[in-house]
Amino acid sequence: LCSPLWWAAAEGHTEIVAMLQAAGANSEWANGTGWTPLHISARLGHDLTAAQLVEGGAEVDAATRSGATALMWAAAFDKPRCIEALLELGADAGLQDKAGRTALRIAAFRGHDQSCQRLVEGRAKVDATNQHGMTALMFAAYWGHPACVEVLLRVGADPSLRATSGGCEGATALQIADRQGKPHVGLLLEDKV
Image (cartoon, rainbow, N blue to C red; front, side, top):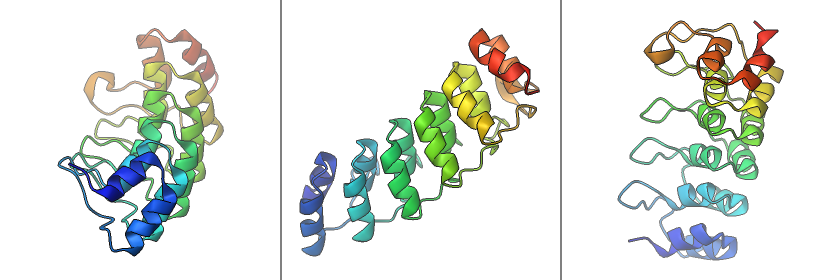
């Protein structure tokens, strides 16, 4: 079950969203998993609709039941314009979901280099780690995403950092790439360590 505002946001109907908000629609209404109109709008890349929702009262950093924010959904589905809009509206790029993922680590994991670029331009901490000491650079290396590795290195990611626990404990991004059989990524990292 979803509200009319949720459906208008999902379809990117910014004018209808504005009319519904003006008529008193609840911008914070959430479905059973905690998805608000802002989450679905961001996930689908409706940047103007997302901006209208926030300007009309939606909490920019509202989290789903899993702890994911609209910024994380925009990063997961490679919506750089939406990422930019949410950051301009004050979204916190440093928040983590319940699994310890930030928007930047999600974008790096998925190989979304343009989203990575927007996030670091928007104050995301490039070397922030999860509970295992894994950085966005390590995730990009693990999954073999050279474009993300290049973006992260260009903005100052530290390739000498080592994971602190888990399956990659003690490994740098280069060692992770090598272990995962990602030589095309390893070549980018070799002269940086």
